[in-house]
Amino acid sequence: MPVPDRYSAFYWGHAAEGKLAIQGFEGSDHVQYPPNAVAETPDVDGAPIPVVAAGTGVLYAYTVLHQAFHPAWADSLPYVIGLTELTDHPGIRILTNIVEVDRAKLRSGMPVEVTFEDRGTMRLPQFRPVETGDRA
Amino acid sequence: MSAGRATAIVGVGYSPIYREKGIDSRPLASQAAKDAIADAGLTATEIDGIFEYPGLPNEISITMQRMLGIKNLASFGDYASSGPSGMAAALGAHMAVASGACDVALVYRSISREWGQQSGQVHFPPAEGPSQYQLPYGVAGAVIPVMGMKKQRRFAELGGSEEDYGHISVNARKWSALNERAALRDPITMDDYLSSRFVAEPLRLLDCDYPITGACAIIITTAERAAGLKQKPVLIDSTSLGTGSRPDWTFTDDFIFGGTREASDLLWKRSSVTPADVDVAQLYDGFTHIAISWVEALGLCGIGEFGDWVDGGKTIGPGGSMPMNTTGGQLAEGRMHGLSFVAEAVLQLRGQAGARQVPDANVSVVANAHGPQCGAMVLTT
Image 1 (cartoon, one colour):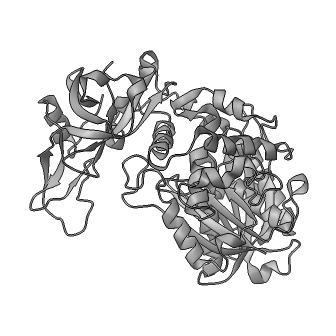
Image 2 (cartoon, helix red, strand yellow):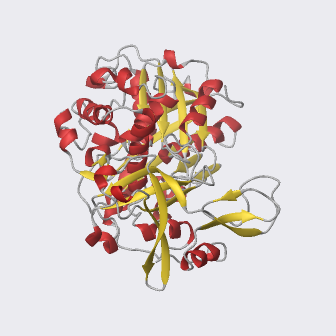
């Protein structure tokens, strides 16, 4: 379970509402992920603001875990971890599991879309293939 | 060339390497240090600087000072784990000697298998801070999952084959067979590599280095002082660090190479030699992906050309045109965590590497780590 902090509360809060949001800054087009205390670019001093993303992207890189390095994941093997590059924010890559996927069809560049997984009292953004045919 | 006093590596020491758990690494660190001091023809009282990585509480530089009975230090440094492995401490010592902060610096890295084996982790902190964006998705085991993704992305973006990676792994055992200190000395074949289990697919078990308990130490002093010491001096020709843009193992701009390209560019810009002059390469192989990144970043071949360059493994093996990781590296000698690559380069340039000696070795390039914590050195005689 993620532990939200003052800079990430918006991210998990939006996820709870079924929205994917990344960190932007007042008076600037700059966006970044993961959120930080300040903008990771010179000359942007505005306050952090949530920027809601379309929730679509392409799979940048992925791995299939065959060994659990945390006991909570021992029963989930094998599972897929992937970095998704957002369609509307090139260069922004979000790490999630890639769910509802036929592992044999995984490939860099495959279109994916956000979905949300209920976990305890929270909702976690996850990505899944866009084409129904690619789903498991 | 770097500013300040010219520096040289004048001593090298190793402890034995153990595969067993439950061995205290402190006596091993002391032994490696004493061996390095004796190798240089110095006494402990002449050491006035101590530098170590990664600043673990029970093995900081003043711990070593006490174990060696040194009265005082003019300079010391405990380098955090964010630096380029054992080379972080060597670079610190080099800077201290070059600047005049101290004259004779001891550098060491000791490692315990317990600490190095992430899968043996027993404490699982909550997913807060940076880990809130990864741990809830099952990213645990340090950089293993992200290293799987880097290998996958390399295939997707630059092509290449599983065999490219396998050549690094097979090569390690060719060399470790010639190294009595190595933990893993049995040869392996490409079939062994290709049938080794996936850990973070496409990352295989034999893409990962082998945890050990052991210690390694080197002595750095001025080139001027080195000229009067016991061993043939090995000069530190140039050094560099590299982090890359938006430095991070996962959320970074150059996902495949991390800071290896920036570190390499700076290294050659500062060096008196070129990639074509390198006789033997010692490139960090904590994961095979890291070694391939350095080969290309350093310009030993072009980006994406490793597969052709390695020529079925011939290039980097005994008798090859670019002998590489001549101890067997961390894949086979064991995960000494960086400093052993520097130590082996020194032995090679002195002509003291025994059965694994590369003929007429005068220039070696050494690189450590990957991602946001890259470091490199050129050593010459």
